[in-house]
Image: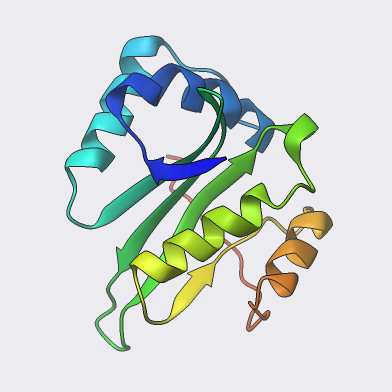
Length: 138
């Protein structure tokens, strides 16, 4: 298995894996546009886990800056193909991201994803607060 920076050619496989996070597959041009934007950003990183040419997981991280507190790195999303889970792939992707960008790290998890909470606890993260997210629906 190899962890590497994502490339535009990975867009289709990344898009397909996103379904396992509860998102719908989007049109290829939209997926490509989203990945392209992140790959051009100095603030974002996208890593993929690759086994024999197949993308089996991805991790998106970004630098979060705040006015009233110190900045930190955040995992914006991560997924491993379900049949490849519990093989250490997610753990290796997280370790790679933490190694590339040192400093404080955070990750937000849906309250309904108990397995994910346990994964991050085993990866050295601890729960520090709960919150609600509000979106403008007008």
